[in-house]
Image (cartoon, rainbow, N blue to C red; front, side, top):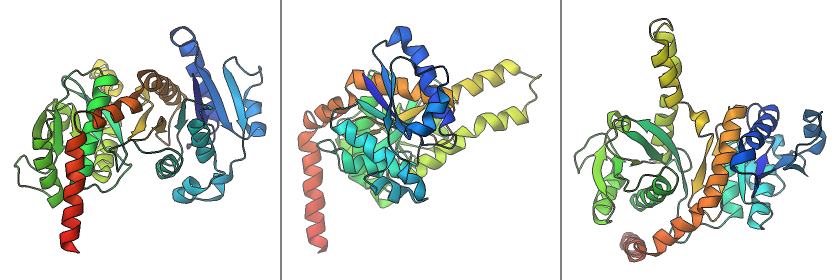
Length: 339
């Protein structure tokens, strides 16, 4: 199994990426001895970080960091010579099994769409985030891949979230909730109201609308929203541990603080896949530490082993093929009426 790592992506590149790769190899020595890591980046820049020699199961893919010439992530994602585009292209060609990057999310999403095909039945890929809940965990989708989403996009997010929750989070029958400003059926924006109706008819285990205060209560294991709202909520939750640490004195209840910090620590997951594409593209936090990078690499290996993209496509092409076809037909029909 070969995992490609964008060694120049992220706020702390390349130090955090190189150290994270070494840590992933140490952790996987017994659990996943067939794991290999390929560092994509300028060899002359990366070699000095291996004074003791290149570890086994790690190699370089020498490429210049052309994307650093632009601050616009969309330009970097569109550049065919950028590190992220090159790594994803090699993934498509079968050179590696997954790509991990802590570079700009926009660049990675665009590069993934340009280099990898979308799964059949998916028109808008999405990325989610596993969050702690009172009873286990929940999966929030989308958290940044698509800032806006139509009703049928939200239904697709729900379908992908269900498969992720089953295969990766080991939740046998995930319940689906639609994030909204209230629990009433006819509340919120028009596309959310329409999504409520479609989810009710989908055959999913849909529990209705959930509010922000319900996210961590365990009301649903898959919570669906657009990328703008999801990203705001995710980053709010990331700030909770630091807030509580400063609010409470460590001497008051150090055990509680340590527990909260572990529960809300994104580093334990490291990164999450862009769902809805025929490949494994893991998106990491820009400020990822070496531990987060190591976790993301191991998460990528798990997703490859589980064949997650294939299972998402199979799920959509099986039970819900006619359902999604009907949605596509209705959208075309309504578009024709408006014209």
